[in-house]
Length: 363
Image 1: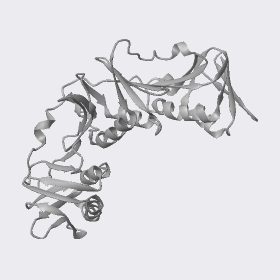
Image 2 (image 1 turned 45 degrees about the vertical axis):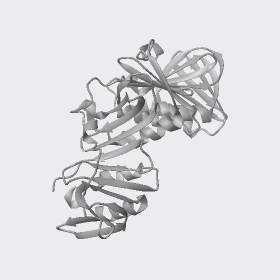
Image 3 (image 1 turned 60 degrees about the horizontal axis):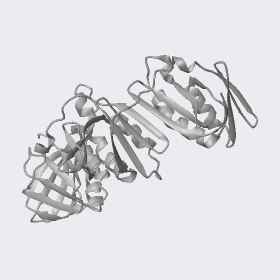
Image 4 (image 1 turned 90 degrees about the vertical axis):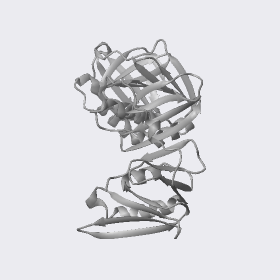
């Protein structure tokens, strides 16, 4: 193998692919990246046996070949070399890396020792506008659980309902649902949230479309010259729609910046009580107030004006509330409550395609 690539392209690709190889792997070779030539291009790949990531970049190939080398070492070496053209040349299992004034040799491993990269030979494909998919993922993925005791809740549930494709995530304390696009196909996929975090990282701002191809075991996300394949989670997602009320006794429409500010201020006094704050919506005063009490620190009440229907109060985890506010794109939000033990709905009143549900804290 002998080829030339630009430092910029190689460094960018290694940065993306190297994340998969940089985790704690039980097999030493999984800490390597696979370099191979294909159609006068360089393919860079890594896998941790759960996720496989491949990026293909332009190259001037003089001789075909393949090798695996330590991902972290190669990534740090290439990022340290100044901009310019880099030559990669393979002699047996040693990779010679040269550029203007720089020469390094990295001991590699034959490509035959690298795990077989997963493929999807026969699957169903969906193409979605990249910006739409990226924004939708950002709004839901943070609500997925990190507790492996319930694997289903560590997934984002990508599914169709009434002719639309939805992305949903919950950790049983909060839930986020986003309607993405109209979709005629029947889709029901449990995709690890950690894999979708990797998908977000590979989606460049100038990406036009993302193509999702899936079978019963895996899903592939293709964006430009980058491809990620992940295993699906087996199981049945809970019937979460039962958690979303259709009507509310109390609603407040408030500026998002105002609600964010009073929540942040009150959360400073809520650390002693695991972030619990009490939201009170008062139709008589036209105020939304957030109160927190800490026996050791003191107490705080912060208020902001809102358009209010009905009155009521509920205790929530302030971190969940701030997380929900951070991914709502509109200038105002509606806070919808029924009772002290009923789910609270946070959403943009002008956007019907996104909803955030927070379960109350029993106080």
